[in-house]
Length: 144
Image (cartoon, rainbow, N blue to C red; front, side, top):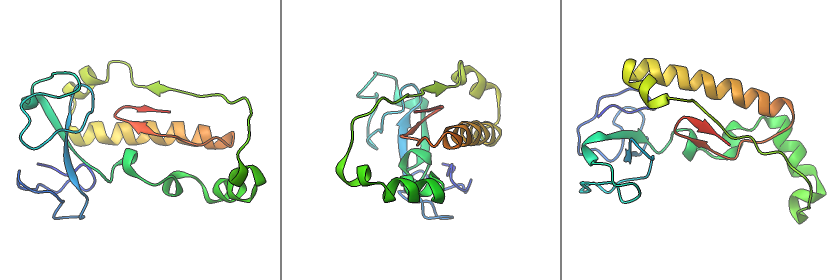
């Protein structure tokens, strides 16, 4: 199994990557749900396990917000009184994902697809941060 964090090929029974130490976990290729090691079908959508993808828990969805929020924006958030007390305000929520991503991914080498998604996430995250927004989560091929 290849680590999506560093690309190292690990044995199928590995729980952690031998190259970077990232936790390896199986996820459903259809819905992204975490899978147990002995699962034959996804418990969320019923997809057969033979079509799972293996990912590292250290990927974008598992990172701390401090890792992907620019320091100047994190400082501004933490210095505001509302960060501690909370506040009510109107917000805008952006959901974006790659249309037809499964079909695109099937046509490309996994490393090439990973590079494309990294660039996609970087462009969207930069746009969100430009307007002092925060990224709540990265999900497979999407962002919120």
